[in-house]
Amino acid sequence: MNPHTGEVYGEICAKRTAPRLVEFMESLAVRYPDQEVHIVWDNLNTHLDGPEKRWTAFNQRHGHRFHFHYTPIHASWVNQVEVFFGIVSRRVLRYSVHTSKKQLADSLLGFIDHWNKHEKHPFRWTFTGYPPVIDRSQAA
Image (cartoon, rainbow, N blue to C red; front, side, top):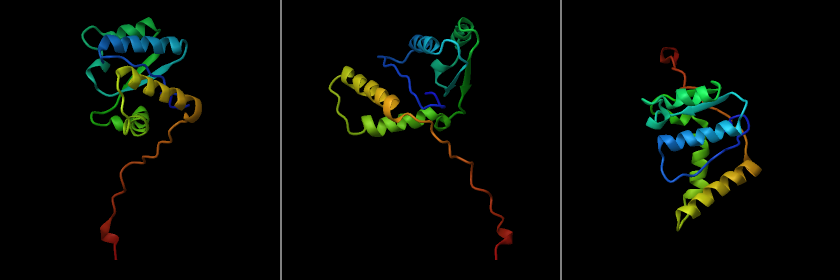
């Protein structure tokens, strides 16, 4: 998800594996051939460099223009793509019935296409922190 425009890029795959994620990232490198790209990830094992240093090698192949940022543990809600996942969950998945994986994939990719053409927008971040501590000694 591009946080400046709200545009979403997605692919569907049968299994979530580290090699498949590298393939996805290669497609992002082609999609954004000469830009700095910031990736915000949670701490899923495939997001980590691993013993084969997959992200170090990936970044070397692409001129060190990818920057990886990790959310704190149990704080994936700070990742704006999670907001988009919530929209997908409510509007595509909640009451749907899919009779095949292809039908599900078509629904998801169709929604992404619709979103990008008609609804994309940056999400306005409104979290300001926790409420201030109230000094009760001043209370009447």
